[in-house]
Image (cartoon, rainbow, N blue to C red; front, side, top):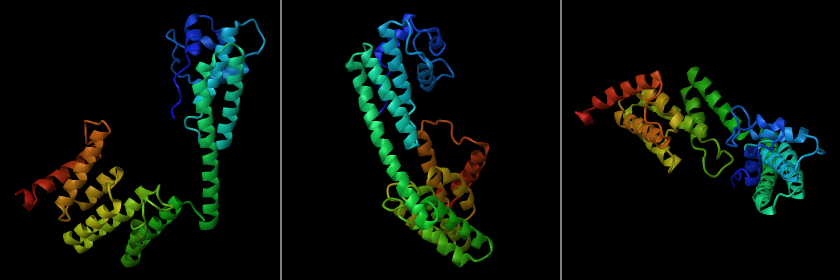
Length: 291
């Protein structure tokens, strides 16, 4: 559930010219937040504004509603359940205050629903944190941390010349399910395992061995792309010159498709990507299949 739009009463008061001077700098004449301002600034200003005074009831109600909106806006990307509950509690107080000063429930109802939605998410987040704390207590690291440690150990073994032990660890990481295990959020780390296996096969055992690993990785990723987009260029560079232009072509094509899906038309982007792209094109165009 997304945060509802700014309530009409708030916009009306902002554009009416009846805002207290303490609030006018937050908004443009059209009623939008000015550059460098966000709703948390408005909420803080509402909290610091004296409750007593000569404000019109409608203005006081709209200010309380603006403060509630600001508190709820701060929950959008909340990661601390205690902080989320604290902001939510204050939003609830301000919603009550807004209704007590003339704001109709038709305007507050969606904010009440959003408040309850975020309270439920905070409770789920608290449970997730407790579950992860218990996991770390049992395993000594988060799932991602465990995979990072395995990959680091495998890299060190490979660098030291213990290829067999390194490949066993890379495969241990690669064959973990990215879909239905505690490692479900670690697709990029699992992908590294497959990339390292593919790199080794291409450089040590030859093209056919590399193609076998490629097929295994693609099957393991199911409907997801292999490699993940962020690994496409490093993997392409590692495969150039190993006799697998067919694999390189698929990797490049997938990267370009992903870029188009993200709305990027000018690709590749960086100088390094252009360099690798040119190497890849030369290899693809010079392959026997293209001859």
